[in-house]
Every structure is written in C-alpha cells, then in structure tokens.
Image (spheres, rainbow, N blue to C red):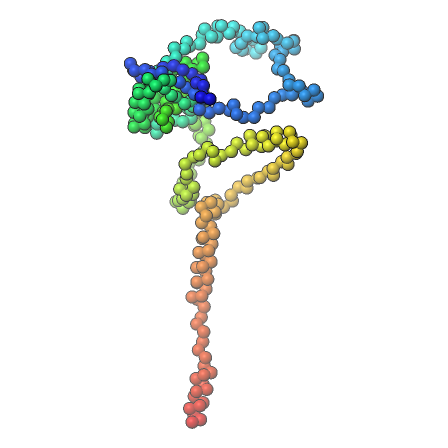
Length: 297
C-alpha cells in the first residue's frame, strides 16, 4: 500500500510553484506499546482527570486550557480562542533564502520529512530546484503552517527527492557555551593526536542504520515472547567500564599498535643481547697438541 502524505500544499520560489507532499521520514509507530493494566482484574486502566483540590472527576466538556499567572491562579482559554489566535494555513511552503549546507548548524534540526512532487505535472520544477541545490551544495529555508504551527524548514536534495526538516526556533536552542564553557583548552601531544587520527582513519566507514539495533526494543520483544511461552529470561550481566589509567597505552591498544610495539621491542632486545654476547674462545688444546707432535718428531 502506498504511503499516505502527512501534509499537502505548494512549494513556492518567487513566481514559480509546484504541488508537493510531505511524508514522515522517521516514526516510532513500530515500537512495542505497553498498556497500563489492573493487576487484580487484568483489565486495561482508563485515565481520568480529577480536580486537584476537590478530587472530583472533571468531564471532558468541563476541561479548558489555562496559563498559570501566579501560584494556583490561572487565566483560561477555550479551544476556539486558541485556534483563532494561531496562524492560518495557506498550504504554501514558501522559500525565503538559501544556505550553504557545510555551514548549517545541525543542532537546529527537529524532524525530517520526505518531500515529493504531488503530481507528474510538477516534477520538472521540483527536479530543477533539487538539482540546483545539489550543484550548489545548498539548502532552501522555507516557512509553512504545518500541523497548526508556523514552522521553518530546511529543504535539501535526497536521492531522487528532497528532505524537508523542521527546525527548532532560536528560543528552543540551548547555547553551547553554557555546557562547553568550562572545558579546559588542552595542548594535545603530537603522538596522541596521530594515534587518534589513525584510529579514526582505519575505522571510518559509511553510516548504515541497519547495522545498529535498538537493544531495548529487542529485549522487550524477547520478554513479551517469553511471557507468552511461559518462560523466564535471565537478566544480562551488567558490564562496568573501567577508566583508562594510561591514555597513551589505551590509544595504542585501540590502534592495534601495542602488540606490534611489544614484538618489535622483544625482537630488538634479543638482537641487542646476541650482539653484546662475547665471541667464543678458540680451542687452544688443538694447537698445543700439534706443537707436542712436532716436537716429538
């Protein structure tokens, strides 16, 4: 069955437009979902909303959104008021600017969507924009009302289509200096840096998500299966990493150089011992015997 679009509208660049569709590129819908169940009856538990003071049940029709102005004091809003205050969707993904992808701060990334032309008649303009971005190693910054909120998106070429990633707003981003500010500026010895670069070079490879498994999800699936079959699963042993006391040795081990270094050291040591060993003395007995023989003759 063909995937269903999450959003449809028009991609606009100046006077040119084409109809496009957004499809979720990443989803958690395939994860195992566990419900809350009554231990005694085995029935699923239903969630209810209770008044925090009277402890009485509050029906859905009596629930409104509220903003706390001070402790336990709220200004309330009806759903219609909130909907009216929000931006109105015109179904237009409007391109405002272009940015070099190499310079883009990826901490702004929120959620990726596949962007495709919505019909065959729009493929030409879509393809022209895609290849232009690919040639310039650039992305397009666009805005649209998506899922009731005005969102900024970065549009990039991706295979035969494009990726439109929603971006965090500036107020949502935490400044790196708040976290990195106390990291000291160390001078790294040349050999250590060379070892680190060697490790990175030898282990560098294209990223393939299929090589990495969600171990929590796998363990949960095994647990569900075991329960259904009446089996028990033993908890895996907990590994405890130990800190590296000798950083240089740890780097050499990681680079696979320690064993080679030790072998070279042993070889050099044995060679040094053999070269410093005194030469064997000549057998003097033979000459003395010969002298005696000649004297006797």
